[in-house]
Structure formats: C-alpha cells, structure tokens
Image (tube, rainbow, N blue to C red; front, side, top):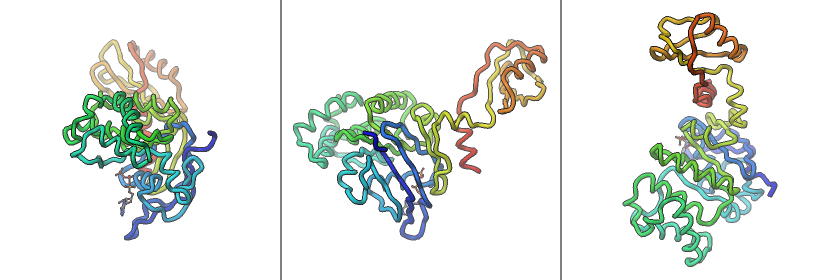
Length: 303
Ligand code: ATP
C-alpha cells in the first residue's frame, strides 16, 4: 500500500474552557515508518493521539489513517489502529488472557480465533505464563506489556504508543524496544510519544517536535542530529589533564584523565588532534558524546 499511514492537515483543537491544545498541526507519517512525536509536557502530544483514536473530537482540520477520513468512516479507521495509552485502563480484576480476548471481541473477532491469536502475542511479550493471573497482580512492566498485547490483538497496521516505557526499568525497556523494532520490520507503522530522547534515537527513523500545539520541526532523526551546530567529544588521556587548555577549543575537565571538548560545525576533528598534539598530551580514546538529540530537543523546546 502506497498510502501514508497518517495524514494530518490544518488540525486544531480548542478544549471546552478555551485551552488551545493544537494551534495548527500538519503531519505526514509514511506507511512502515517508525515515528516519534517529541515535546514537553502539555505540548499537545496526547491530544493528537486522542484525535487519531477517536477519543478527542477535533475542532478543525483533516485526519486520515491509511487514506480513511477518521470523521467519515470512524470504524474503518479505528480498525487500522492499535493504541497503547499512557494510563493502564484495563479491568484490574480480570485475567490477562481474558483482557486480550475481550478486546478482540470489540473488533468482531470470535472467541476461539481470539484465543489462537492471543497465544503468540502473549508469548512474545513474555506474558503467557501469566495468562490466568488477574491484572492487578502484574508488575508495572508486565502491565505495560499487557497494554501492548491488547492493542495488537486485532492486527492493526498502525500502532500508537503514548510514552510506552514510562516507569519501565532499563532492562525491560530494551526488551520492549527489540520487540517494537521487530513489529515495525514486519510492516507495522509505529508512532510513539516519548520523553526519553534516547528512545527516539534508538528506535525511530523520523521525528516531529511539537511545541505549544505546533510542529516546530519534522525531519529524519539523522538530519536533525547532523544539523546540530556543535558536537561534544569525550577525550581520554594517558596522563593527568589538570589545567589543560587547547587553542581554539573549549575544554571541560570531567575527571583526572578525561576532558570534554566542543567542536563547532566550522571546526574539524583534525584541528582538535593538532591542538592536542601541540599541548603534548596523548589521547587513548576519542568518542562523540551521546544525547545529540537531547541537545537539539532542548534547543528547540526552549527557543
Ligand atoms: P504530556 O507530555 O504531559 O502528556 P502532552 O504533550 O500530551 O503532555 P496534552 O495532554 O495534549 O499534552 O495537552 C495539551 C494542552 O491541552 C495542555 O495545556 C492541557 O492542559 C490541555 N488539555 C488536555 N486535555 C484537556 C482536557 N480534557 N480539557 C481541557 N484541557 C485539556
């Protein structure tokens, strides 16, 4: 299918009481993409997801999911989407498998078929041995995975996750990342919102940054990080770096033998090596400091 997964144009949302959550949002997400929507608290991310999934009514604008207008054919659009909201919203007294099977019922999937579909999903999300456990007895990470399992039971072409790894420990987060990557490779388009910049950097091809109800940037992650004006490099030295200065470079001492150096777009790594040579220090390791996207994000959000 060549259609875009999501086409949003001129989208506005004014909540009752007058809060303008979305001023004007235009956004295209291609079929098969892994896309991150980044933004500070209150920027409008959840409102966009709410509109896509039919929970929030738009004030103005057009929204299409795989070419289906969400207003004109709400049910057909809804079938295309699996959504994992921020808050756990299943019945805590029900068993894991029942929660997933019941969801299938909303999409007209018969119980027997739903049971067969649920098994591989629960297995891959490592919940199969908990299938008869009531949801309230699951850990936070398991509850989060149950939300994902439930969202996938009707085999949606688009999976929307609102902060999927909030409150999930690092190990589990990486496991979930692997699973989401696999899903995406199988052809599921994924849109996620996140506060974890490294999550977007690890998973997504494209990013949009939303600020006060407007998309202020939308580009491939690689383009965004490339556009950074300066890069920080971590330099490990063989000897003490105390009081070290380098001509034309800003040096920050991290510990006895480690410094950080900022290289501006107009400068080169060669020039840094020359400056280090001139200072007569030996470099044992030179590596770019991570969190490039974080810098960029903070720059954009605080502009
Ligand atoms: P967060 O990262 O904190 O989840 P967000 O980017 O998802 O934030 P939204 O939840 O979309 O932001 O909120 C955007 C704006 O709309 C905020 O000013 C918020 O207070 C307001 N808002 C959200 N939901 C409602 C509502 N039901 N009624 C009135 N105002 C709302």
